[in-house]
Image 1 (spheres, one colour):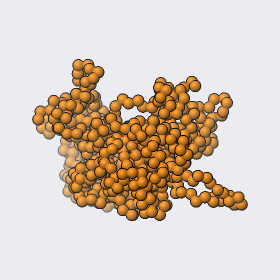
Image 2 (tube, chains in turn brown, orange; image 1 turned 135 degrees about the horizontal axis):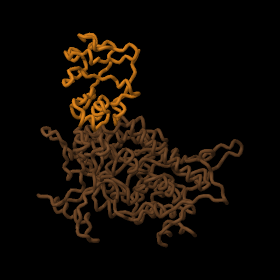
Image 3 (cartoon, rainbow over the protein chains, first blue to last red; image 1 turned 60 degrees about the vertical axis):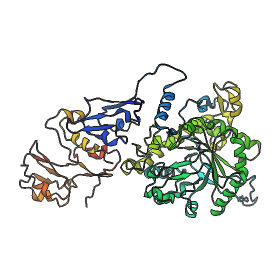
Image 4 (tube, rainbow over the protein chains, first blue to last red; image 1 turned 90 degrees about the vertical axis):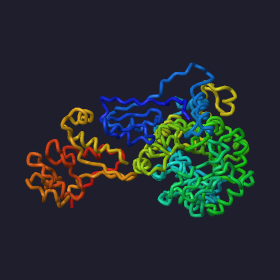
Length: 501
Length: 136
């Protein structure tokens, strides 16, 4: 069928600068560029361009640029270009529109309406370069009270398993399958170097990554792919994945063509078969059922590691979180509306769930009201872009945050949203061996560790400015936040006062 | 990863202008890249001179143009003395030497001796090329 869709991007090639080296031809995963051997020139097919900039960055003469196609439609506030193009695409395919990465719609980003406090005159700020500044965070349930031996000062309380992380920033679940092995190895190495954790996602832990298992959160999701006793024993924490911010309420589908020999071995499924994760866990239909799985996993790991539950932020998130605490989870990860994915129906990604800021505040408030906040650590996920977002999340009540999009961006990702195509020119969201080699895990780990180091320094600076010398003093301390431009009801949910009050 | 940027930067470094656009589009005869990327996708491999301890090319050279510097260990060909007989190309076990037909001499890697890091290594985006000193 003739497609009625126009090119999304225009590739601009400065022929004065193009040296016909064909780097762009080789680097593009979407075959945008081609070389005419006879004429000796290189030309582009703009309609295939996804705007990932791989060719632009690698062109040795800066001959290339990519711009959005400036094609204009008649102005219409209702029928915007995206709405028209989505209809055209579905008229041509008759299918569910797929997309990748996180929600790109202009929902309010509450981080950008929250501002942080600083000390002036009446309380001293702290210089983090001169004085110690504690960012270490202990993940896991905390006891009701702690008893110390009066003689020796030794801890008398039997502590639930605790996992310390040097920075409160963890790499969110990205499976081997959704991302390439070198990309996951980059995350694993960076987590080990920075003293934090990465998350295997529902893809199992590849043999080659077992040396990094001490920094791994091993996920158990509805398809149970890659789960066996060795996997559970190897991880630092175990995570039951109930839902994901990008697609709350639905499962996952890794198409058979992406299930290579390595992916198949790691997921423990036959080569080339579709890896279907059901929407629900078929053994969990209640909080009581969830409790059974939590304790099954605790038994399987001899109560030696925290077992957490990851849920998508949905309307009733606070009550659900309360139930999860009572089911015995050691941590809860909440993934907000802007959380990313390797593939999801566009309509789910863009319209289901609630923003993480509101969900986090609601959960923290509810757990405090019920006197059970200490029973879990809270990990906020979905839309953390910088160190200020991290700090605001902690002030809203998070113990730590998950980052995934930010981590992939550090590896080169341009958020082109084509992960599901498996052609990623940056070697991240693909299993094509020609493309995956583009990520050298040594370089990837360096880039990620640099990012975490930079954010840590900034967090220390901001904490020092507030006169706080330990991150835990900020946790849930919403007096250090003020709202700018929010309604009364939004501020009520966030538990934050307006700026100036 | 087969981007061939080592070739681009090698050619540039061995050109008159050492400017990537001028070297490729203006200078004639064009300079030659000394490194070459061989492909059997998905595998790709850069082939360059190994600066052998027992260089067959030096032993075979009919005019004495090919010499190994006893100090640096770098094997270079003196284009004044090279007569373009290609004997060195026939004996090189790595296939690392190339004919510069425009100039009638052999083109070979000189490890960019005037630079701290050879151009191919400095510009390799994936750190696939590294410079390793194996001097005994």
